[in-house]
Image (cartoon, rainbow, N blue to C red; front, side, top):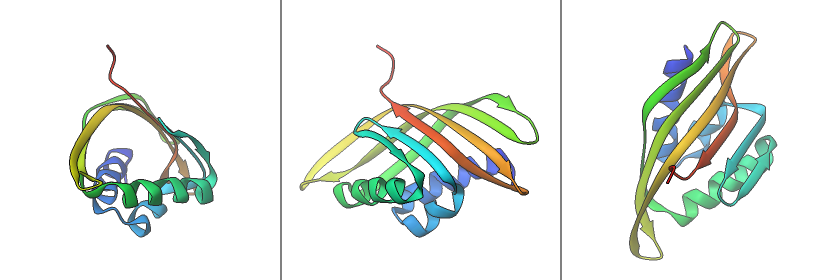
Length: 122
């Protein structure tokens, strides 16, 4: 799998709202920053993702405008736009912003080790 393929699979995994699809794409030492906080390691990240999945029903998630800032045989860094929409507390909701992901090739397998999601620039 290439870094580009990994990000495509990650987008699909997030849209599925199933941790079992997201988990293999993340490094054990993953660190994720959302607007709700920073979560370190798979256990904390798992809880954060499950909370998001439980909060946003029928979520549709997409990644676009990927820019590869660094891409070599062991490290890849990409910046992108993300959008989501779903149902929160029975009401339609949506959002989006900018993301940065750092991927590493560990033992021949590409995985996300860092993700930072934030708002679009003003």
